[in-house]
Length: 116
Length: 475
Image (cartoon, rainbow over the protein chains, first blue to last red):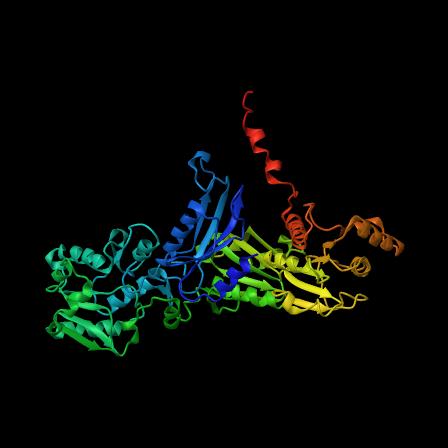
């Protein structure tokens, strides 16, 4: 339900930003299908997809989009060894879709790296 | 944007192919394209065009790194293949005209300038022609500004050629610039009437969602998260009643989703999110599939509190925390006052003879009766139980005596036991609380329980983790 606050932030977003959405879950996950996170170049702007290492992977994937990459699906596997003491001992799997949030999510870093 | 800049459409050919063709037509005898990887979409596209690929793995060193890879290849060519000059360009200005290139090449032949480049307005552009005599300078270490530094160090050897071609100074770095230069390409996929349609961004869809829910309308949003047709990935659109925005990029997919979307969620749901696979078509007409993630947004469900007394205040706050729209009703103006309920969507003075006259109620809404006397609860219950589509959650506060007295009146009025059981009376979970805040918490907790499907029991008693997984220590 706090989704709506994130929607308001998203609707007003200008400049490069990346949206991560949990589109599928299986088993026990900290957030369910529909959870969203808005990421700017410097880090998270709003929302969460569950914290821990999984969220870190999603943020790293977001950085790939700022470099001009296409939307990606990140598969976060939380079925880790229980004794790892990781916050991710939930026991489930999440699929997170990571895409540009606005029309301008870093189409390339200016004129420096455009010889793809 | 969903693909590398080199592969974007530039009026019918990719950026890289178009630029390679332009350079050839403008007088370049050979075109090399420096790519990041020998495999992959960009390399394949280059192979289809007039350019020859050279690999700078990972694009190491950026533009100057790639330029060095090309120059290194060229200076090792046999004498008869080696050129007198190179024209180099990033892929950011694919619309540059071949006449522009031709005039630069002509100026290099005609003059003794070692570097020739185009100027349009106040900007210098590409391609830049560098005589082979000057190319060793690009290999110097410490070129903090890359090729630019070599170009700037001696203005006397540089010839700026004024050109009427604005595309010579393009640096297409944003979707807006791309759309400006290639309006019919930037749409990526043609719409239903053949009009190119730019994809909607999540920000645009979010704005549509807020607009629809504020107008009390349901709205579905959809995005293709995976597809065997790569151009469809990331396409976003929305549907609300008869209105729609954006386009999935494939007519078959649009139809399949429209037909099925309402059946994905229960009619009374005020929100939902699901991924489903749908059939679609690839650009060459073959059938394909797309995984579409669909969300439903409906105006948030209501919490209608009847009786603006002590319990109403904490209950209104807790309901807001749960994301419900709060409306508070009372027949006493001094109690039904806006300043007592900040954050409530509406506070109304009502007449108990027709308490819900100005309050729209749907099955997804909640009504909690906390009035000052059971005769007022009774009036409300009669109205609610006679509605054709009443709220699913109707609760009434009260002691056993008060609840019984109210139900006896309902029975006398002709309501059956089944009808009476639709009312949660007394409302709330059995917490043993007494104060208005404690009562409000028990009602809010019951609402969370009903929506979440829980039992209301303490989790640690329910899971019994110690008993189930750990042996009892020996006495």
